[in-house]
Structures are given as C-alpha cells and as structure tokens.
Amino acid sequence: MAVVWSHELFRGRSRQTTFGDVPVYTRIFQVKTDGVNDDLQTISAAPNIGWLAAHPEDSTALLVESNIQQDGDSPFFYKCTFTYKTATDVLPVNPVQRPDQFSFSGSLTSAPAFWHYPFANDNSSTAIIINTAGDPLQGLSRDEGEFSVTITGNRDSFSYVHAQMYVGAVNSDTWSGGAPRTWKCQSISGNRKIEGVSGSMYVYWEVNTTLAYRGSGWNLQTWDVGFNEVTGGVRRKIMAGSDPVSEPAALSNGVAKTPGVAPDMLTFRVYPERPYAGIFPTLPGT
Image (tube, rainbow, N blue to C red):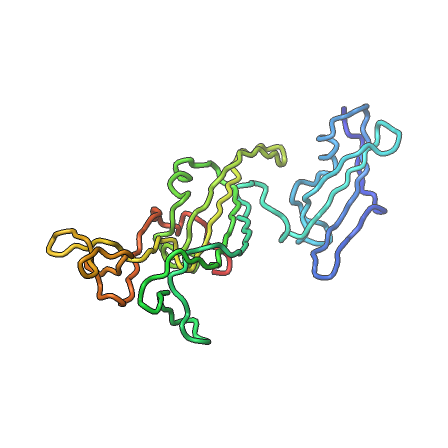
C-alpha cells in the first residue's frame, strides 16, 4: 500500500465562531492510494500535518481533531478533515500536564445551636443561648453554610496511603484563605486511565478530591455542664440544698458555678489535623 498523492480541497475550508468565542477552523484533504482498504493511520499522515500544528492563517489555532473517511464509491480515495482550535482551548498532549479542574458548590447543613446574635444589625457580637435563669438550652439546631469544592486532576500515580491519611482530616495550616481546622477532606478517589495520543500511550490516574469548608470550624463543641464537680481532688455530687441537682449545672474548671451563671463551652478536636499546603492545589482566586 502506498499514498499516490494528497492535496487540500479548498472548497472545504471553513471558519466558525460566535461573539465572545474563539474560532474553529476546518481543512479538508483528499488522499489517493493504490490499494483497497488501506491503513487509515498512514492515510491520515499523508498531508504531513502533525498534532498541534498551527493553522496556516492563524498561528494561535492548533490541530486537535482528525477525521478520515472513504470519499465516494471509489476504494482509492479518502477525505481527511482536520479541525483547529485556538491554543487557549488546547490541552497538553501528556494528560498529567493538563491543568486541574475545580467544581464549587454551597449548601446549608444542620449544626448545633449554642450562640446567637443579641444585637440588631450586628453580625460580629455573639452570646450563648441560655434561658432567663442562666441555664443552657440544649438540643437546639441551626442552619450553617457549608462550601464544597471538588478538585479533578491527572497524576502519575495514586497513593492509597495518602488517601487514607487525608480522608476525614482537617487542615492544620491556613489554606486557600481558610483558617486552620475550617477545611475537611471528605473523599479522595482515583481512576486508572489509558490514553493514546500521536502514537504514544499514556497511563495515568484521574484523581478526584472533595473538600468541605465551614467557617465555624470542624471542632466539636458542647456545654461544660454536669451533675458532678471536683473539689479538693474529690469528685462529688453537686448539691442543691440537701439534694443533688436535678438538672446539669454549669461548671468552671470542674467546679460548679453559682446558680444562674451562664455555662462555658468545651471544644474538642475530633478530626486529625494535617497540612494542606503543597498537598492540595490552591483554589483559584484565593
């Protein structure tokens, strides 16, 4: 099998675009061979134009698509359609060198309600939620904004150890504008991919990472209240007169507060902390 000749069909040239979009160019070549059912890869190479070659009239438009079809009823003629797109839309040949993609979403989630805004038109001052006797009100909930981002990127390999370490871990450092313990890794998944480009085979992993942001942080908070106190190194019941208290009393350093005094909050770190900087790509715009 051999290519007899190849030439461009100028009646097939086209340029398509709309306002605000980049142009797409099309060139069509006719190729004649001397055999039947000849090798399509050899036919596609007959115009001698390689992947990502620049369009002759627009150096910013590169060859990114190729289509080969038999031309008419003759088994010796083929039509090669080449499509060029502006370089800003063209991805690198090597999948690992392609930029990460980011997907953002925001929603409301239920969270415990411990504090409120006591003053009108003031979003900076807060106060804990208690009744008029100073006792904490428990079991209340509120809506809290939660922001999620999914990062999709191609990697040379997928680390199961890395995934096990980070899923469920919060950031120990400031990352993408978020203070420590405000980001939590919700999931990490990897899919093995094989892609052939210009005769080369690329084996890589498509890795998806989902992170969730809460401005209030991911630490666990609860009231410092109970039925017991520790005084003089001895743990004993909190008494109301001659009887133990029937409701949890507010504590301060393990000792019961004066009745009617608001309780304190206890904060517990319930998720492991790990550095995010250098591990996850910084979010665009931060």
